[in-house]
Length: 116
Length: 114
Image (cartoon, rainbow over all chains, first blue to last red; front, side):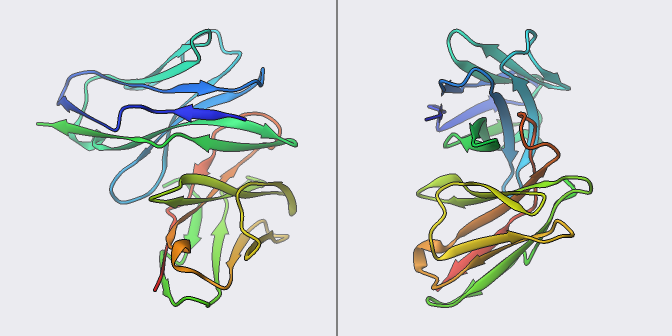
């Protein structure tokens, strides 16, 4: 069974600094996807970044990058130049193949607070 | 705005009642996923439909059912509601079914069972 572990319950960072959010995963699948979603206090889930298990290069999307270390089974999210609007819950997720379906398995999330 | 719409945004009801949550996927997306987010269980996959057919089931209770209609919108039916069913219910959609790809989430329906 697939599992996502996010051990940091919460983090604080100063505005304009970089921050790394940790995520480790466990799967026996060869093909899988890793995702990060942001959930602000308003509740919606916002897709941030995706990394495929066969992608050689780390994914980047603007200020977000995913530090993918396959051997260590880690998929850490790096946010550069934090902004106040980055304060939110962040969820790491993995696509888990199930009978041809790609459901997402989520970690418990971690709360990021960006201080001015 | 993800392009996925969900109605209603909030729902307050009593134990034992039945409710229907509605989701319209992004234009062109054939897959619809339902997730439940609660304080104790976190975010859990419930069920997926692809082009009208049930594709996968997760931790969905027998009191819950879903369907996807020919126009691709989906409904999640929750019956004999219990206090523990209070949660945020998300619908997500994606284009493909067989390969990993991002799922776009709707704004959610917050269900409160009193």
